[in-house]
Amino acid sequence: MKKTIAVIKGDGIGPEIVTEAMKVLDKIGERYGHEFEFKEVLAGGCAIDATGEPLPQNTIDICKASDSVLLGAVGGPKWDTLEGSVRPERALLGIRGALELFANIRPSKLNPALADACPLKPEIVGDGIDLVVVRELIGGAYFGKREIIEVNGEKAAYDTTQYSVSEVERVTRVAFEMAKKRRKKVTSVDKANVLESSRLWREVVERVAKEYPEIEFNPSQFDVIVTENLFGDILTDEASMITGSIGMIPSASLGKSSLGMYEPIHGSAPDIAGQDKANPIATILSAAMMLKYSFDMDKESEAIESAVQKVLDKGYRTGDIISEGCTLVGCKEMGDLVSENI
Image (tube, rainbow, N blue to C red; front, side):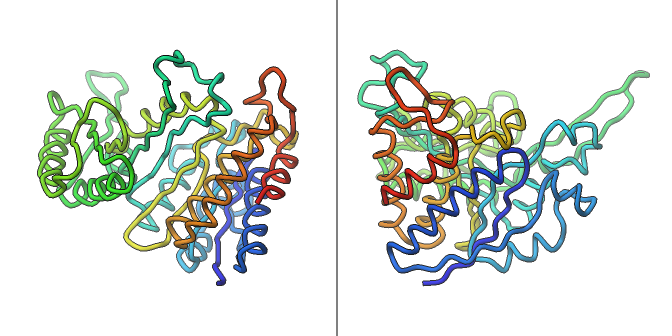
């Protein structure tokens, strides 16, 4: 089976970590009889340098024509002084909107081999932590009307959060359908005591919840969490820390079709770029999510996850997850190790 993957390596450590994920996908192709064709395109700071804009139309066109998109990271201090509309990060918002990727899936799972790196007490961690946040991705404050204005003689600014019933419904159904395949629990996060947008959010989610009587809604323990864009951004960053390192967390951005975008949740880490220090595991696990959600290759996805587990069980670690008694490896060697264990 041949699949075309648009590859956005991006900035900072992006090229390093994406290269390792591509290596692992090639190994999967060899092992299971698939062919992955990679088409590299520009987005972010590197696109600004090459074309003057963070998201060239050519990139959008190739992504739309591909079966899936693999993204590294964008941004860095080099472009921090640019005006907001042409900053590298605008590429992320632009491509999510262009591809209509409305649901961001971010799992936070504590790997047993990294239990010591979790900041929570052992009695809280118990048998492990395994939750997933379903974040609405193309609405809310990040896409609403915004403006810098003058109020009472001084500079002020506002951002608008707006959601329609259909926007809330579609991301809520993603969460409940995912819960059916997990532990059958959904928690909705809002601020309905203050925000009108949250009051609508709660009204819609509670109605949809009634269509899933087998799913426990707003339970005492987390399984699947569904929330709006801004809250989801904050919560997923917080949830990532329970895994021991932000370098371990993959993500999937999904829409109405099988075309999705897959990326680690961490940034471009320009301070370690080009030094072979980056942790490629989040990107490799993002590739595993791609196989599962976009290509229906469940066993291949599980093979990558199993390979990562084997490597960690053997005590290999990049710098961000190193602990006493473990073997320090670089980005490239970690990619090699995962590939060898498939």
